[in-house]
Length: 489
Image (tube, rainbow, N blue to C red):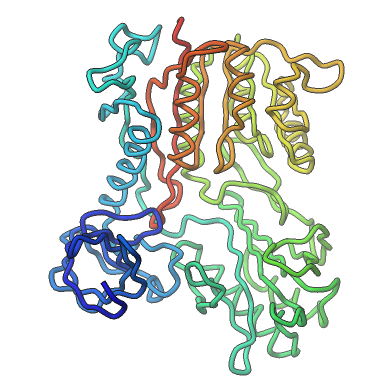
């Protein structure tokens, strides 16, 4: 195929980036803005040897699962590329993502089921039929339906808007996929409507007082981004301009305009004078109120500052953590490790049902926040330590003179790259009864489950079931909670 060729193609699948997948003339095509079930005429934009990228010229026959996008900029922005696929189909697609990873990368035999009641090995030891390999050659794992949202819009509690000067006025929005080309967006349908009011007030302030936007090419200008965070339970809103410097002019006018918007109670400046793509700098300067807001999650209060890690979809976070707690099977007598614990959200959930919880996190600020969150909620049976989980657990000490007690349950919530192999080896050597793996990437989840299930040094762990949770509707991302049980029972 050559660039600008026009072909007719039926869309049979989706990529995680939200591109439709089909075949024409023996070539795999990745078609922007197409959805599963479409028949389209597409123009080739980037031909390769065995595949090509294309864009829609005409939808010949729309998919029965195609729906109108709520956002007029959905195609240009690309932040939620699945918006034109029905939500029910999105959930089925995400279940398929997890299934494909488990089968192709993990080598497991996957059995789809509607509930845990269909899983004979959920409670008690592994059932005999799941201790051995299946007829297809791989260990069998149960894949449950994806837990989705009743209303899959307006779910994000955090926005980071890049700011530019364009045609004599200040603009903000989001970058188009794989570019630094700004698409102006005032009202993103994944965010609360109050974000639009805050953004409009802030851009008006910039234009009124001639505050320049930052220019990446020259490194000049002042305002780089506008960060907004909201406590959905408390209604508290934090506004934080990210600036190339340490001060803004006419700060009183800015705070007056922002506090006129109900909920805004915290205004800070984040200072980032470094060249590059990092959004936030190291220093945050309060302008009004506390340099944080609070939110309630699972009946516990958490403090959120501009740099804090906090899940952006709080309602689905409670769903995910409830799944992790159920998989942990706590009775009040267990010693639990929460590795990659962040600011301690999962640790505090677990602490209410465990004897002791030990959280490990490599980021010192997050460990400090975790300790403060535990104290704020009166939880005393949880202990947090700074360090790389793989190093501390491998050494057998959380800190000098603080040995790691043998855990009954280990909870893993690693970053997208998954677990370090040395951590998997160390956890296997401790021999906990259960491992709960919370994953944000099906590929690394499948890879790590395969390592836990392999024979060799330490105990082997069989993945009993995987429960996907849709934390980010209209995107290709999916979280999962997997239960692994020791093969020896």
